[in-house]
Structure formats: structure tokens, C-alpha cells
Length: 364
Ligand SMILES: O=P(O)(O)O[C@H]1O[C@H](CO)[C@@H](O)[C@H]1O
Ligand SMILES: O=c1cc[nH]c(=O)[nH]1
Image (cartoon, rainbow, N blue to C red):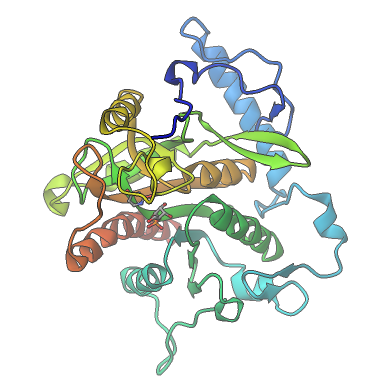
């Protein structure tokens, strides 16, 4: 058995490596700043700082009318911007006409899930298609992602892992800008492995952490690692939790940290990949440490989803259903029909939220 370097879990709070630049939501380099949030810090001052940060973020990411502003001066200079992986362009399509009314962008890994969600949410919000028509996959030509529009809801597939959802997030955020969408809210509707929770349990994430339990998303840009906070909207998470109802739903909904792994097998401590250089004891120790740290589930997109939406000043939430309890095994072998029923659960919660917001905005 080859030797691998073990993760020193006690080092998780230490500074990132020297060649990593930490940037805050406003794009400032904060690599040299001490970590804030010690138990002795004054909470009123923290709240004030938080509000100031939110205001600065808003001025960087919104025009006065609430429409999405990009943090990239080069886009304005382009004569036309082609969103290659969506098969849509600012010159070839009237993006404002097509998407200007979008308020909710829902993403999930597979095309079939996002098509099902589009039909489900259509029924839930009472959206009617013209007689004899059906929903069209707007990005079909790209052959990469599938996208359906149901009134103010966009339902898009993102594929697997951070690179895939990262490309989509860049293009969808640009789409929001070209379409002049006002204050959109983003959701990831997914599946995950639970830690200490039964299969079928729904998880609302309160933050994303990476495979070393850091609450950041790191990416190499021009030869340097850039690290951005992987934050999710706390109020939105609480509101989603308030819409869950154990008695009515018949299943549990919990809130906690979500680990974003860069791999399904070794990266999630599975013993059933093509390779495994650790023991079952190592795996269980790691999963228990994650659990003690507040991690309730593992998937493969949470950090980048939190980081890019936060950087864009977009309210975002992740709702996943656990397909298994990783403390009890690694194989995902639940029968297909049960799995499909479980996958509906995050859709039900997100639809409830959308319905509630639409009712409020229509004044009833
Ligand atoms: O939530 P969905 O889209 O199912 O994605 C989850 O499932 C995939 C692995 O099977 C990863 O992409 C993980 O994040
Ligand atoms: O264990 C699991 C199940 C779904 N998706 C993951 O990434 N991990």
C-alpha cells in the first residue's frame, strides 16, 4: 500500500499557503489580516462591519434599479458577448426580452432533474404554456447544459463538480447582467452523501467547506491561488428551513455545513473507488471529525456555488437530499424509484419558497 500524506485536521484554521491570496467580497486582498470572529470580538461592531460590507458589495454588484452589475469592466467593451456553453449571445438574442423577468435560477446536476423541476414548478406556480406547446431546452444546441424557463424561474443543469458548475455560473451571471434581471436568487437543488443522517433526509446548507474544511473556494488565477469566501445567504437558509415540516413532509430537513469534495471516491473518503490508499479506520476518523465540525453532508459544488454567488452579490442557497448515510457505507444502491422520489424533496422545498415569494409580490 502506498503512503499518502495525511490531512492534519488540527491545521484547518491556520493561514493558507504563502502563494494564496485571500480576497474578501469586495475584491480586497486580505491575506495579511488576522482571522476575525474570535469569541472576544464585539458582536455589535461585527454586525456593523457586516452591514458596511454588504453595502459595499451591493454598490459593486447592482445598478440603482437592482439589476445585476458585473465586476468585469471588459464585458462592457465587448461588441457582443457569446455565452458559448449556453448557446446564447448578446448580439444574436434579445436577452432582455427573453430573460428580463427571471427572479429565481435553480440549478442541479442532471438535465432530466432540471426538466422535471421545470414541469413541477410550472404546476406549482400555475404557469400556463400556450396551448399545444411544451417546454423547450433553450441551450440544447450547446450540448453541454440544459435550460428551461418557466415564467420567472430558470431551471438549468450544471453537470458534476466545480469546474462544470463554475463555467455555468460565469455564464448565468453574465446572462443576468445582459438580461437586466433584478435581484435574482439562485438555488442548487442536489443530491449528496449524508454524515450521520439517513438517506432521504433533506439538507439546507448554511455554508460550504472544502475537502480540508476551509470555508473558501480556491482557484489558480495567473499562477496564484485565489481564495474566496464560500458564503451562503443565512436568512434564505433560515426561511427555507421554516418551510420544512416534518409531520406534513414525512421526512426530516436539517441545516448544516456542506463539504464540497473534488472527487466522488477518494475525495469523499470512499473505500470503493478504483484506488484506495487509506484504511477504513482512517475514513471513519475523517468522517467523524467532519461531523464534529458541523458538516452534515458531502457533495461536489457547494464552495464554488457559495463563492461565486456571494462575489456577485446574489442571494443563494443549496438544498440537497442525502442518498445514503456515509457513516454506514459508500455504495449508492438505493432502488431507482426511491431515489427519484427522494430527489423531488429539495424541489418541493424550493418550490414552496418560490410560491411564497410570488404570492407576496402579487400581494396575496
Ligand atoms: O447534486 P447533484 O447534481 O446530484 O450532484 C451530486 O452528485 C454528483 C456525484 O454523483 C456530484 O455532482 C454531486 O454534487
Ligand atoms: O455520496 C454522495 C452522493 C451524491 N453525491 C455526492 O457527491 N456524494
